[in-house]
Image (cartoon, rainbow, N blue to C red; front, side, top):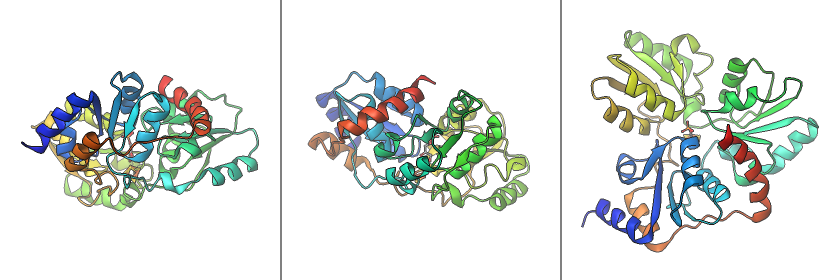
Length: 301
Ligand code: 13P
Ligand code: SF4
């Protein structure tokens, strides 16, 4: 029996919902019930009726699912699936930062640990960060964390002054403005889409047609009639883009933009996760109750 068939059978036996992020391996995306960006998958976790949610993504995504739907068993097939960006700030560091800015509103990107979320007023993802920041009264001071490039982008889009944490994603920060300028020169007719975590997103704005979340890129792929599109993000997204639009050529800005955390999970891990009920994600109730408030505001936006 193929691994794919085993996974499908186990999903049915366990009555499990399999969620996969757009950066997951193609074969994992292909057996998932839903594939999408952080916001879409969080909403799917909220709506889940199945007793088990198996999350093919990274740890902060599985934690978010558990916080938003605590009655479910939430599984992360490999505990080594972390996130370099989420590791760039601890709850202790955030408490110190907050103490330096009493009364400031804290907006935390979903790429944070549960205990950092518990210190935040709002969570956001790349697809609703601008909307959330714009909804905060203009006279309030804002602390935005942890991604400096996303923060700069949101500052530009909303016109809001915000204090930014100096964190970045080890994969996206390497995509630099000079790479983008060179790729654009090599592919003069190509459209360029970039994720806002990219080190090239704000500085290289003249070279970028759209700055989009991963699901924004997927929707763009369905609509574009451009012969070539340069994609500045993790290469896992290309699987969906190419399948949805076989007539456009989707090229990665860098073949090396591979997130080791997102690639941690393979089909064998998903099979073992479902078969052995591993690895169950738990969030301490005192943390979960505070983080849920910030996450519910993110879901509602
Ligand atoms: P999206 O919410 O755009 O999918 O981004 C998640 C992420 O981890 C990007 O590195
Ligand atoms: Fe984290 Fe970057 Fe990987 Fe996204 S691509 S999961 S932000 S390390």
